[in-house]
Amino acid sequence: MQILEDLSGISVLDLSGETRVATRPEVPVPVYGERIVEGFRIWDPYRSKMAALLIKSHIAGTFYKLVSDLNLSPASKILYLGAATGTTASHFSDIVPAGLVYAVEFSARSMRDLLVLCTARDNIIPILEDASCPERYGPFLEPVDLVYQDVAQRNQAEIAARNAARYLKGGGALVLMIKARSVDVTADPKAVYKAEVERLAGVEVISSADLRPYHRDHWAVVARKEVERR
Amino acid sequence: MKITTWFGYIDASTGEVSLAGGEEEAGGRLMRISEETIRSSIKASSAIGEVWAADLQPDLRKLALEAGLFAGDCEYNSALRSTALRLVKIQLRASAGAEADLLQTIEALDDLNEVINALEERLYEWSRLTDDRRLRGAALAEALAEEEGSMGELARSILALAETKSSVTKSLEAAARTIAPNLAGLAGPVLAARMISRAGGLKRLSEMPASTIQVMGAEKALFKHLRGKAPSPKHGIIYRHPAVVGTARGARGRAARALAAKLAIAARIDRYSGETDPRLKEALDRRVQEIRDRPPGRRKKRGEGKDDRSGRRRTDR
Image 1 (cartoon, rainbow over the protein chains, first blue to last red):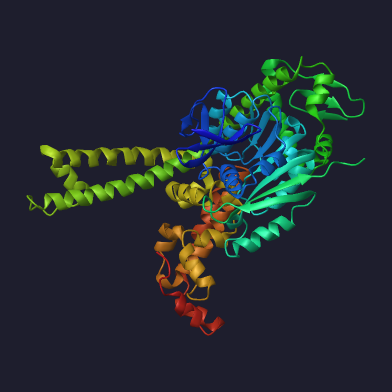
Image 2 (cartoon, rainbow over the protein chains, first blue to last red):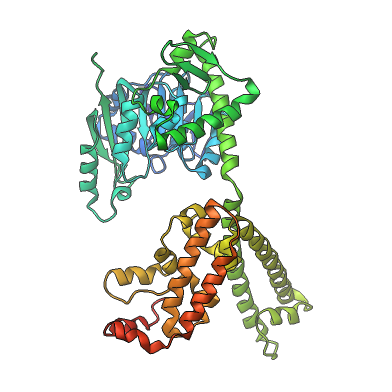
């Protein structure tokens, strides 16, 4: 095993010829059946869109730029919208050992699985709420350094913009996974993606990438919120 | 003005922070908070609603630490985590209600039906090798239950499954009657449960127009019709109701329409009041009788009658 790149707790490894992203947990225990190699949890790009984005950025040579755009530190606070059963959330939990991941998920079924992860980790805050109503989880939150969103809703960009407006610190990053098929199945996915990016108000888009071949008709958008001038 | 947070209240004007309630109260208090915020996000009229509907998020951590509620970040994190875990557990328990149970029960019943049919068919094919009695289905399983070897084993399994099915049906009927007494009374408990399951809950069923209920389950025919390639379906899963199958072909569309209208009303009563209303059943019976008594030719006067005839083609089930 060889470490190719390593920044803010995210590593790119060479596993006998295969390129993999991974995070290093305090206790190396698999969460969703992933491989553990020398203390690293291998981050599956087919299951996690974030891993797909990281691998693609590594191949494109923009890994350092991407990760430094996210501006993560071990004490960062992350708002994760659409945490589902916690596959990706568990890796974020590895990345911010001294911070918090606020994991918002609306499905009771998924939350039941997520709860298992939340009990095993001490830095994930489960919130059973609807991400399209940001004010509902206001009583729990604080301003965060990163908003990560992966919800299969029609108004993905609007949800992201409203959550970023309310919870993202000035200068903080937004990572939005756009699932074009959830917005409009009949339209051309690329056109849908472009229209969604147009709808991202209040943040400045830094970079975007499609997630092929790991996820079809998905795009990742990284944006930054402007520092408030008052 | 007070802002409600997970650890207590913040006075928005003075910035004073107070820790509310004892540790054991926290779960119930948070349940109230989440209910309040839910309600206020709908009405946006209560005091909490106004504060939380505002776009700015107060830094709760900073406020709580400044007020000295927690000794440090670590204490804040672990207190927040344990309260959030407790609240989610309460919410999950509340969501896993009788209705979710009903949905699983009807699915289980459908699965049982499918499995029993498949096994009975297999048993029939198998029995043809040695047996010349012309028995089928449950009767065949009963006849072969005493046999030795794998075939008898299979027959016994079928009988056991049939028993499971009848007990599941019984509990399904009881559940449907408690959750939706009017709907169950009008449609029969199994059909009522099937409708609730199809709609994704009584709430959603009660919000459906009668026309949707009428063709629920005939989606394929409906969309074919909407694409302009077929006549409109007259009935979906409500076809099995005696008011529909018991009516002559030509009047089934009308009967299905009348039934769907009453079912929609029944679902709404069940959702919002829950009291049984016997007038509904009487009104339906009267209307169905009226439809059946009406001479079939009369409708042609209204139009050219072309639609009526094309509607006779069986487009669904």
